Image (cartoon, rainbow, N blue to C red):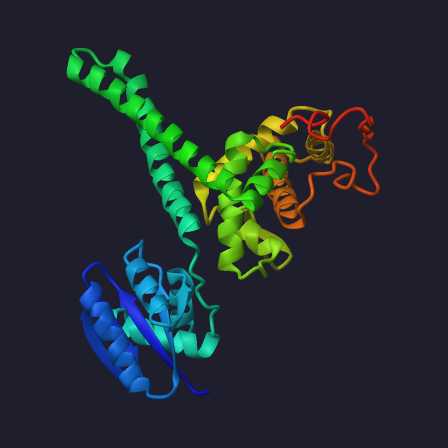
Length: 350
């Protein structure tokens, strides 16, 4: 069957649509979405319609669900990647109309993967995670503000009491969101078992197990179950970025820091906590890196990457973490065996 590609540039109030050399501007509401579906089907005729939409901070979500419900194939793409591709094609101008045509051409040439609609329970948890990220950021700002209050003379009571109340509300919201996520995961047996298995990975505690379970569930839907480990590491911003030219390093290597920054920070802190204990496999890995001359922060980042890879392997395999399988084949460091009377979880510090 023939395919007709359509590009939609999304803003808060309007949609710029490009299809088969035609352009139209519609409103970004239920009426505009219905008119969009009717128009693209009229233009495409008997051909299959593939709609390319770039992420726009959430303004694209109602359109995605409407197109999905209408039976159209939707492709959600990353704005930075599309913009870099357009510049590589020599397209420097940027308007809403041009962006819609660029999205259409990008879909026709690059054929991005189709967007998969998550189930309702997973979508609720994803929105809760997004709100949790906002609450945690505001909580950090409020804490920093309150730490400076003793150094500010003539501070009125409304500031002191109000900031204390605001911090208390933020902590209550954080606990509320965590309890909601935990309850959603407990309600599904497969999700509950996956969350419990993640607790066996060094550096993964109760909260991180909940957040990683939601993240892995979203990743499986996002990649249609064919996601690679390297892509997963890059999604969390733990992939190394090197710059070498002429045999010399142009700048020091560092991680990309893309993706989910707050979850990356939680994985980092969990890995840091577990790496301090020499009796678990992650602590041994940390000490091997330090013995090879790696600085503390580089070693902890490498441990964070290990924790993420181990956690994803546990999530996919359906088995608990086995520290013996995580040991290197040729290691000068002694391996601390687990006695038969001691469970795997008790033998590791999480």
